[in-house]
Length: 310
Image (tube, rainbow, N blue to C red; front, side):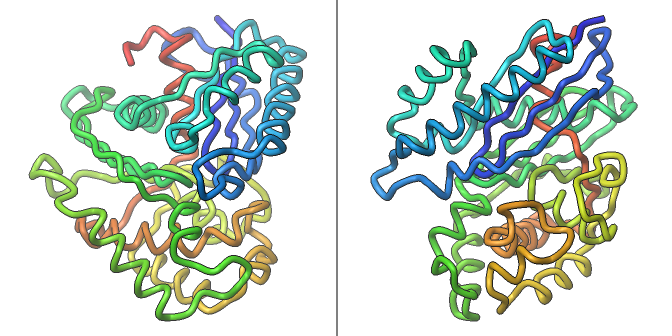
């Protein structure tokens, strides 16, 4: 039995998992989601400002201290789209190494998809031939993965997420106009293009991972704080998503942030993320999907501390 931690530094949120396991199963001890504002802070020239780097290094330091105090014998950390994009990512990596003592890995889109799939299905008891599809809708990118059992198959990483779309198509601190919403949806359809091949078989279940699906699940359940056990398995139908879009559209980001179920820092990005999810449902012909609280950090844990081959 090992007790260890896996940290995923996303575009909008840092997700940190402290867990113990025997190499095949994971028992969560602490699972936290903390806004990191990295995507929001990214300058137009593609660099992260020094204060954003410092704040996130401090956040990592606090997480490492906490996990070590709770008995973590090892900690692994990775980052995804925001660091793939940042032109000064080496500066961030160096600061994390020197101050926190972690060798921060920057994952490619395909690596992110593989680990996310492993994490998303880790709570399921799948037979080797059972097919599963996963959508990981993040702040900076979106991964769509098909697989069988615990083995991921074909995957696509789209350079579109809740934060990047918000920054690209909406005016900061203003309620999006109908024209802006229409333009965003049109551009998402163009980005998706020929998203997938016929490997996506009809009738295969969809698992939804990421900040946007989790937030929508919280709202559907009427939760006011993140409770993983009450989020896992929540179904999001087309009707649910359309209803949420109707609830969000035309409202100021501050109004959205004031919704009781809205996690800190997500109000300004939730509409773009929900619109992206709606367009994915359309192009992939999805009628409903089930939200999973598991994801990349769980796959990262299994890859480093488990016996599963990820």
